[in-house]
Image 1: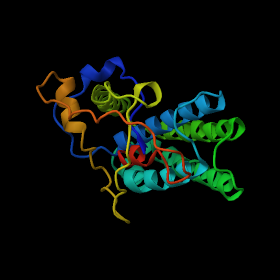
Image 2 (image 1 turned 45 degrees about the vertical axis):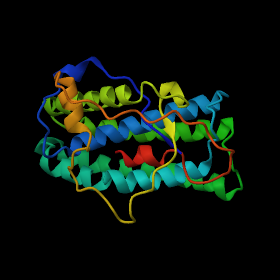
Image 3 (image 1 turned 45 degrees about the horizontal axis):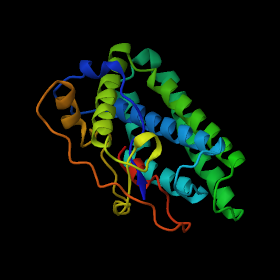
Image 4 (image 1 turned 135 degrees about the horizontal axis):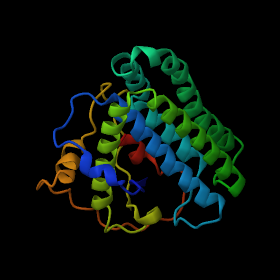
Length: 246
């Protein structure tokens, strides 16, 4: 099973350029922060007692974190961003913040693995709140690192990110079963072991998203058919595909 994006686009979508950039390491950092925001909100909902319609387990966050690290190539993108896009006067700060980002991400997996090792197959309200706090810390560290970029670069990447969110929201608008209208469907196979995008590689949807934001005729792919969850069995994470998209 997987979750697709749960978010709304900001007004800056229209400012995104219609031409796909070649190197977007800073965009990857911002997009991972958006993943963290999604996960935090979902966990806050669990902590409040909301019924999401699917089980939420510690294993999902262990597995999802592994995929997020691998499929976003977050460490490689951070290194490239600092080397190529952070100005000299900000490099020291960025180099100090980079390990905080990775450590805060790994703390999510460590906490989730501890819950699984303790025999918990489902997250209770207290567990969910604790993991939500971890995601909040992770997102904060990512955004502080992102803030070391020049202001014009931040605006450009924010425009790209908004275009992607608007595009993904449009793709999933007719889906049912996910949190806040997101799509929920059968999980696709995980990428082959060791497969990682190159640092700076643009998301595959970016060209279509920027064309849509610029008023082009590029049409989003058809939305998947609405999905009904099968009987519960603790298994791999529901967030695998979402992590894989970043």
